[in-house]
Amino acid sequence: MGILEKISGKKSDASEDVGGVVKLDGRIRLRKAAAELAKANECVAELEARFNRLQNIISDADAAHAALQEAIAADGGLALEAYGAGLASDQPIAELVAIKENTSKAASAAKDALPSVEDMLARARAEAARLENAKFDATIVYLKTCARGEHRRYNDAFAELSRSYDALCGIAVAVSATGHADMMTTGLPVPIKAPGFNMSTGPSHGPSELVTLTHNITEARIAGSTSTWMQARERLWQDPDADLDDLIGPQS
Image (cartoon, rainbow, N blue to C red; front, side, top):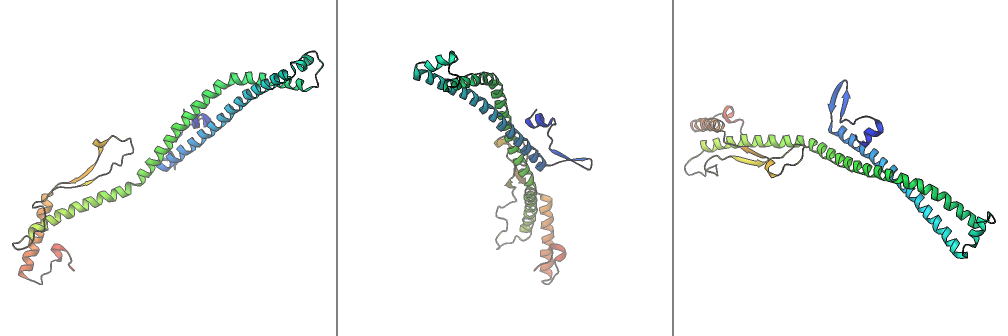
């Protein structure tokens, strides 16, 4: 159970109930992660203050003990002897002894409580570190999700490039003629490739997971393009003013 769950008694969720329909939302997940981390950091700060308070109590007791010992050494214990005989209740030594006794009792209790607080602080810091990683992951996941539109446009552009390549290969065959440079620079149609992008939101799996977009030759599409442009070629040969819009579209 996370710190937020400990405080609220509820499990965190990265969904939102809208009209009875649960919607998953990367931004909601990020907000939840940020809220949990904020509460975890508050818990850490509270425990750090508690830990420091106990440490100060122990330090105060050590300081009171040292002050009393210095006073005893300064006069060889005469003031302390008088205090023990009830003759120095209004003297500085009396205050030093009282402070020593009070701080010593408080320090004893603080030392008993310190291990438990130290353990809670260590666990709270570990939980805060875990939640910080969770918030960072939620940030990356959300941004990667936002990039899906651009990724879709990239894939659509590659698909359009592939269709255009097939069409141009077909045109190249139709307009091939002696004494004219070949349109196709590869001799024959070749597969075309482009680097792809891994849009998954899980952990990286290494180089074996790299994606490559590949378009293999679409012979039927090339043949169709060749046929259409051969018809346009023949029609134009027969009539220089022939209308070719039905075959190859409007021409400028």
